[in-house]
Image 1 (cartoon, one colour):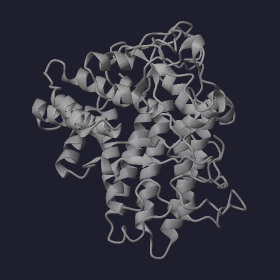
Image 2 (spheres, rainbow, N blue to C red; image 1 turned 90 degrees about the vertical axis):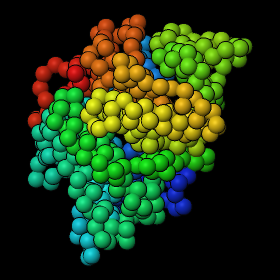
Image 3 (cartoon, rainbow, N blue to C red; image 1 turned 135 degrees about the vertical axis):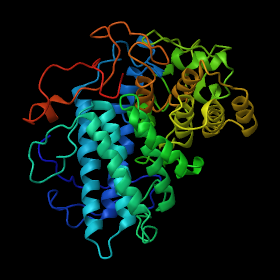
Length: 477
């Protein structure tokens, strides 16, 4: 990555906005005419769109095997580990330039304001932490301590452990800013597509994201259990689904979720590509999960829901496809949810990383299941009945929690990828994935490779050597 500059903010309209971005930086290297509000909203738009776009969503959802491509009848065989360097380059540019650099500049402007806009600073810091957490979980070692500095042309890459510790520090700073006496009065409101400037919700998100990062680190650094226990004692994380970090899309052209836009462009607005993967639907069928008809549609001639193995040829008459509810134009994108946090807390309790033991783990687990069902519009009665029927035993609690977390994250492939890798040592993850026919190195995917043209070649301080998509990252046992 050569010196990162602030990109110009184009005119983007969204279903969650009441107006489009009308200001454009005349000089992208000196965006003095931009405001923290526009920089923040531009960063949010770009991050959300990347998460649901073809470069990241389609690449990961097939590689991680939460959806099935249908082989020759669907998206096409042989694409599972064919992640283009152009795709990784687009993800990299978005996270560093379109999101990260804009957020750093927004923080600078907010710090220079009189009075200082502590609420705005806190919002930007939390969104920056989310952006860079996503980046390191895909790529591992990344520029962080030297990124976005005008005095450094070729930033060194920080190790993933250092990056994550840096993000914890950044979140602590955000928490302090969001607790400032003027935070509520100085948050970005109109351009905040997540919480409309609610400082309390941003504060809860900051603590929740901190818990998630600590859970990612604790296997390699067991000392992080102390911080996990402290967060539980402080009890300042999300308390309900109203705290979900949700990005809303709309039905108008230009406002649509890019998952729908892909299907609209190539399949007339119908799902002609993506099938139910057996890794997700088979355990749901075994437990009569009420989310099945919310996630999937039966084959046109089928009487039952039938899954498709990774890279196997699908049959639209007999096999289940992914529901258009998940691919709708206005389907929201969830960057973090209450049930995601609950599953993590359940796991932490089951592993005695936090107080409460199995009883707390089961209570959190059942609440997570109920919330997961409600998010996908299962009736309150069915959600409560399903959740209350699921108990945990000491011998299998962690495995069951990981499996249900996987099912919940079916349509959020980056989070599914993260939790799958940390669910067990290599070869012992939950669920068990199969190496697809034609996998280039006969192995499962464990990381994305840094983009060659955008980063490795131009940056003289980039990592040197031979790297593979099956190499594990620091956090992964």
